[in-house]
Image 1 (cartoon, rainbow, N blue to C red):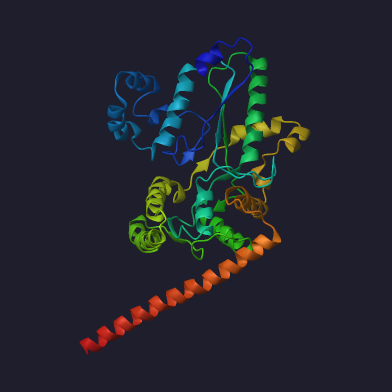
Image 2: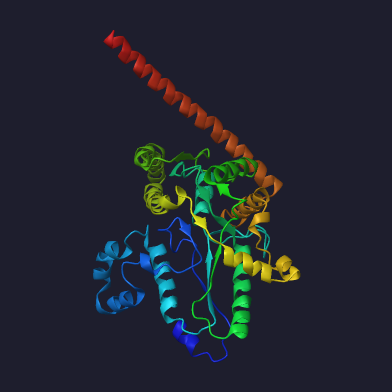
Length: 365
């Protein structure tokens, strides 16, 4: 893309979309480049990629990735390093959004077309499939609405073109980070509480079990909890599917879920601080009319209202269930049946455990 851009004689603005976590090896992330955290510069990595096979490159992954938690953040950091080295005099800027979730208002309220990150936790929990995960409830979750991100990207393009016209050559591309405002943060604990509230208000009509999520901040305890809450029930339900002549799916699904939890674990148990000085100055440079038209003021975001939009959107666009009165009533009825079954089963397990302990105590006495 950079090589193509350099051939465009009429190019006025180029915005590279990165991520706020491209330099997550630092907890206080400034709006600057961090080439010092790469074990190997981007030009050398590209050269190595041309010389060795994919198999050998995969074997080199741990050494190359270094302190980065996964290849996603590492390759984002590499891409930024490419821009730093190759951008030259291009009218270019970098946009770093945090965790992108459903839209707030545009083009549709709560619109979403994928199931990644925190929304996967919400949907998996609402379906009664995901019952345990590794989360530090006190850690801050950096969510941003998708429509706000689009507005920031458009503003970045405008500002980049304006700076290019005014100042001519730019030696270092400006970086615009976008995350929740410091005075309007949300913790993972509040995020999960909000999801539970709307789980009870607009439950899905298709649930495997009564929806609940156990949050474990100690990662060493997760395998044990996952075995009893995911793996064992998964084998049981897959056995039922086999008896019905259907293909078993849950055990494989839980394996994928556990891999994703392992990858995303560092992001659900750590709080990052994002410097957004450039982004705040960008907003101030916009006219009042443009600030209203291309809104991205995270300080004024009503989290309760946004979460309501996101959960209704999740039900409609991911669950494919329109939030009609009839559908919601059906979901409430199913949730109540599963709740009774859940607590009856849990009570039976407690009673069985109590009986076993009582019997063992009598044998000892």
